[in-house]
Structures are given as C-alpha cells and as structure tokens.
Length: 226
Image 1 (cartoon, rainbow, N blue to C red):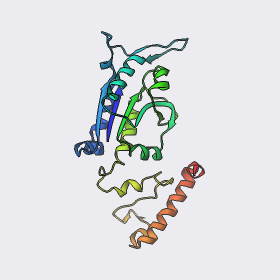
Image 2: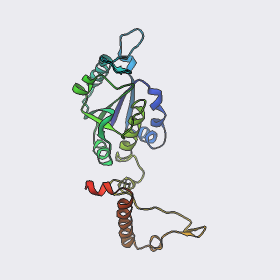
Image 3: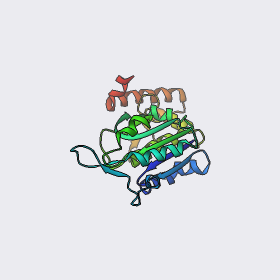
Image 4: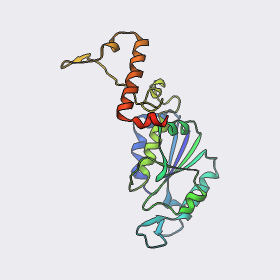
C-alpha cells in the first residue's frame, strides 16, 4: 500500500508516522507513506498557498492552484483508489470505512488548513471527504494521522497476530469485551472465573455476551445502526 499526504505542515505529522506499528510496517515494506509539502507546488516567490476568502467571512483559505498542481503531479505517476480530503463536514470515519480503505493500493490524503480549501478542490479533485468527529482542528494533519494509523494496522502482515485486529472494538459492530491479564487476583480484584477455565467455547460465549452488554450500555447507537 502507498499513502501520499499533501500538507502545509509536514512536521506536524512526521512524528506519528515514524513510530510503533506504522514505523514497523514501513520497515517491512508493507506500506509506503510519503509527505508532500504544499508550498513546493507554488511559483509564488513567497511560497504563498492561502488567500482571503471572497465575501465577508474572516479567515484564510488554501488556494486551488498549488493543490491542483500537487494532485496532478502525483496522479501522473500512479492511479489513486481514493483522493481524500480531511474535513469536519465530511463522511463520519468508522471502523467499517477503515476496513475498506485498508484494501486499497494507493491513497492520497489532502490535509485541510485555516478555513479549509477553495471549494472547487472539493468539487473537482476529491473523491472522498472524511471527518474524524464533530469538532474543528487547526488543520487536517492530525486527522490524516488517525486515518493512516487505523488503516495501516489492518494491512495483512503489519500486526504480528493478524487475528488481533479482528477482535477490536467496532469490527463486528460491537464494543470489545473486557480483557484481563496476570495476576488473576490483584488486591482482591479477581479475573472472571470463566476466563481461567480453559473452556474456549464458553469463553467465546461469555465474551459475546459482554460485548453486547457493553455496547447496549455505552454505545446503544451502534446497535440501532445495525
């Protein structure tokens, strides 16, 4: 998988993409993540990438010219399965969408900034808009990092135990059941006896019951969505 990210602040996203699971995925050659500084695609001597919006609203907007040049140059080298724009009014990001993106070969992410981008970018250059929540960030870099992290861990071979991702919260529309480890008794707080029984069939039954109960209690909206 190849992921290209266009941003005005590459330093803001470099650290999250160079540690832990994502770093190991890149070292294994399973994923290639490439940052592209938007200012490299402007002919303005001041490397300007933003301007005032038409109308009375305050705030700066990313210009269409450098974004167009960046996307067209990248598209000239490969076909992208998705060209994503990170936006607070985009499609809500879910585990189901992460699963879908993990099957793609080439993904391009454009990070929004300031008051967003010239709307013609969204009308003509973007294939998908994604929001990580109903709130506004200073820029889309952190949103892009979240998308990349959630997608990369699903790529086959990235996790040492691929079945681990299949038992994460939301994979089956439910929250994950409680997890425990040694010691079985700490300060009188005991691990549920069923987990120590060795009866895997009964353990799986207990885990499903717990997942349903936790989802009903904590996130009932997930069950309604089903």
